[in-house]
Image 1: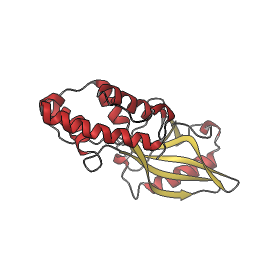
Image 2 (image 1 turned 90 degrees about the horizontal axis):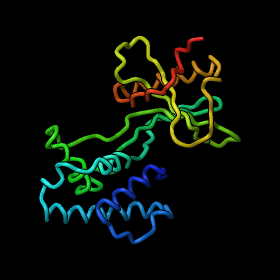
Image 3 (image 1 turned 60 degrees about the vertical axis):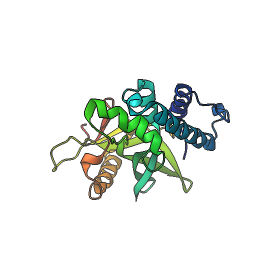
Image 4 (image 1 turned 90 degrees about the vertical axis):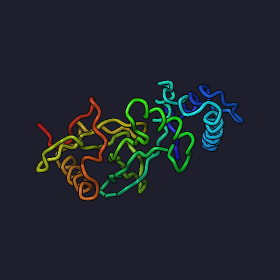
Length: 216
């Protein structure tokens, strides 16, 4: 798993808020340091829960909530090939779960929701989205562009495909794509809808642009 700067920042917040004594330097950003910290946090929260009870976690710091939501990983669900590009259907899933870190999940995800909403589970995943991967010299290279559909879009006869910038990667400018490339990407992306419903896609951000249908 590749950790982004936001995820490292999230780990730093959790380490500071729960006064963890690191056995390593997070600034070196070695992946195993991240998992070590989460194991430390798991043990720390187990002790706090036994000592202070569930009520202690009914309200937690907003920074802690932000940090937990940032701990996700990208999972490949499907792959389609174009002439000089690939489209990867991916979903962001929560790293902190009942299976991986049960005390972190219970204390920082489940319990804070009981008071406000009566919920004991929450999906922090970002939903499905499509990565644009170019092929150069027979090598696949991730770009900074992702595509997505609007999950709240009602009509089934016409799907609007959006694009937006997402993280680091090779710079590509979809505004410069010709209609043939736009339409090919659109057709392939719509093919993913036979496997995943539009309602499961991550909603486009407010700054997202429409790739297709393209208005000239």
